Amino acid sequence: MHTFLRVLSLSIVILSASVMGAYAQSSNSSSKADVVITEFSDYQCPACAYYHPIVEKLKQELGSKVAVEYRYFPLNSHQFAALAARAAEAARNQGKFKAMHDMLFENQDSWSSSGNPQSVFVGYAKELGLDLDQFKNDLNSGETQKTVMEQKQEGVNMGVNSTPSFFINGIQVQQLPRNYEQFKSLVESQMPEDT
Image (cartoon, rainbow, N blue to C red; front, side, top):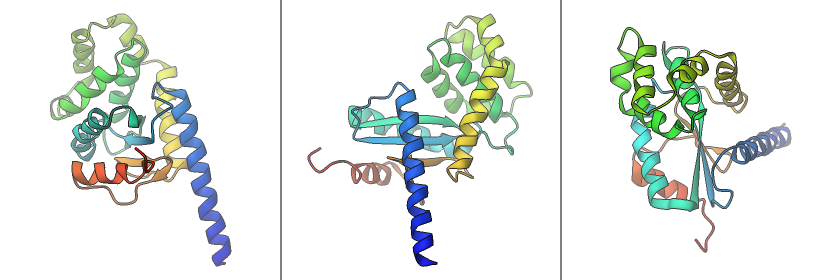
């Protein structure tokens, strides 16, 4: 039984690493990064908003040594999370994912308590100079919905059941770091010795 569990555990790690490798290849991140952080997150999740500036600071401070892959994981308990993820994806279609991503987290309290966040998201799109007709069409398209739900399903397949969930080089972080210093230390522990 012990051997079976060890083999099963190793199989899960290998599967996770291969899935994460596929994500890294399909995104805009640097393939030369020493560490790839994959974050499964929910735009309406307060804990995810807490980690947003921490992850941004890691990217800024560690530069090309770290690549961050963001994956949608809208929780069913958050009424507008899937809509927010679709807004980010619709902005990605016009090259403005990062700007919309930042706006969604930075203004989380405002849009998540509004009665009509879709109109708020359209306002963000206007502020970013997006083509509003395309943004609205993409926001509500089946393809955008499919992208969001496929990323969520990938997370489910990898054992994600809460947000935020982080993977470092394909291995799930079991205990979230409490602050920037702990997160940076965790990331640096995964870098090659000569870095």
